[in-house]
Amino acid sequence: MVEMKMIYEGELRCSASHGPSGKTLITDAPIDNHGKGESFSPTDLLATALGTCMLTYIGLTADKHGWDVRGTKLTVKKEMVADPLRRVGRLIIDIVLNAHYDDGQIKIMTTAVTMCPVRLSISEQIQVSVTFVQR
Image (cartoon, rainbow, N blue to C red; front, side, top):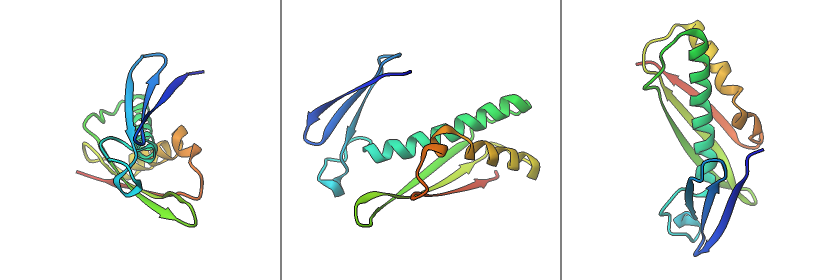
C-alpha cells in the first residue's frame, strides 16, 4: 500500500506528498472553475495518470518484445462536461510512436494501453479514444 498526504493550502490550491519518495506536487483549480490555473488541476492529474500509465505499459510491452520505444510521445486532451455535474467527459489520446511498427506490433501495443491499471479504473462515463500515429 502506498500512502500520499495532501494539504489544502487555500485559494483552491493543494499540495500532495508521495510517501515513498517524499516528492511533492501542487494542484490548482482551473481558471474556469474559480482557480488560478497555475498548476495541474486534479482532473489534469487524472488525464496525466492515464497518459503516463499507457506509456509505461507500452514500455513494459516493448521490453518484453525487445523493441526500443524511447522517444514515443503521448498527448492527452481533456474535455470537461456538466451533465448535470462538472466532470471529465472525454479523454482524447494520441500516441506518436518513435518508429514505424507493423500491424501486429500496433495490435500488441493497443492491448497494452487498454490494460493499464489507470485505464481499467476509469469510469465508463468517461469516453476514452486512443489513436496511434506512425512516424
